[in-house]
Each structure stands twice: as structure tokens, then as C-alpha cells.
Image (cartoon, rainbow, N blue to C red; front, top):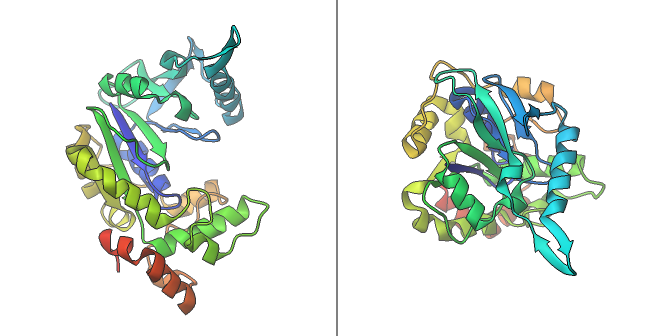
Length: 287
């Protein structure tokens, strides 16, 4: 089964990783080139090709970079594409009930290998493959492909994205530019509107959760996920606090704020936000 954890950047994907890891005890794979394999305390004995999987993110990135280069091979003056999904699979053992051995997951940076044929194979697999993505929707989804989308009020998204891009880029970006979509992944509204077009076709394979609602009641979010994909969870678990996450990686995790009043936005920026994103804000149930 393939489950995409989908969001526009800084909308709460990390919160969802926290929820899936702690309550459902499953790892999550990021599809981007610099993504990580997000393990958790309930998984052990990670291995690749009958050898222990390196713990170092840098070593895993070298492996996945090599695999991505092998996809496009020159053979007899023609480009030969090698989309072998088996080369991207890693094994782990689950350390909580049902204590399953030889569970399968994907290596990070796997975006290029997710062809329609391979997605259909993974969707038919009894393992749960959780995939973190900020990408736009596919034109078609197969049986047992699910999307859990997390959304957040755009004023908080833009504030978080503004700080993130300025910490991780040599180019200074203004908050106005973020609001106008002059950032990677483009306009917040256009991103969500493209998803709005595909959601009717997904029907019961789609679940949208609000960042604020997950923080307020994580157990209810778990119930909704369980209803969607049929996977049990441990209700005795708790979300890892944003304070602890911030201490682990202050460059990536900020405060997890939910209050719009905490956003330093000017009246002109508020007007711009309403002009460009007012329709989508209302569609997602925000003021």
C-alpha cells in the first residue's frame, strides 16, 4: 500500500511524520534528492542487500545518488532507462505488535523511480509505504494508493517558509515574495487548486487534516487515518513536542504555532494575502 503524506512546504509535514512514527510505528520516506529516511524507535535491524543499512544520512545519500544515476544509462548510443524498484527497497523489523520481520520500505530520493508501473506494484504490496512529498498530484491514482494531505493557515505557512528559505539560501527573499509564490513549489493557492481538481477522482482514497486539529486532538487524527488505510495505532503514545524537535534541529523545526495573531504581517501584506489566496483560504475552512 502506498500512502502519500502530502503538503505545501511548511504546512505541517513534520507534524505528520511525528504522528505516523509515534502512533503507527512506521517509517516515512522523503522523495526529494536531499530527503532522509525517517525511522523511529519502533523499527530495528535496517538492512539493504543483506547488509546493515548505514546510519549516516550522507552515506545513504551517496547510495541513492548512485541509483538515480543508474536509471539513465547509455547503451548502444541510446538512453536506456532502468526503473528497477527492487534496488530501492530496504528491510526492517517492527519492534512492536505484530512484531513483523522483513518489513519493506523505500530509500529516500526515490522520486524518479516512482513510475506508474512501480507505483502500481507498491500499491499492491501488503507493506505500508509512507511517502513524504510536496509534489503536485499525479494525473491518475491506482487502487491502494492513498493521500493524506495536511493543511495550515497560509499566514503561518508564509511566515515559516520565509524564515526557512532565508536560512537555507544565499538569496534574500521577502515575505511579499513568499506570499506571491516566488519560491520553490510556487503559489500556495495554485498548489492547492491543482489538488482540488484531482480530489473528486480520489474519492475515499483521500484525507485532508488541518495542522491545528492534529495538535488539538492527535488521537482523532489517528482514528481518521486508521479509517482510511486500515492500520491500527497505539493510543497510549504522544506527539513529540515542538520544543524537543526544535532542540534536535533548530534549523528545520521552529515553534509549531497555530495562532494567526503571532504572524508579523502588515496591513498591506494582509490585503495581498486576501487578494491572491482568499478563495483558497475559504475553501480550506480558514478565515
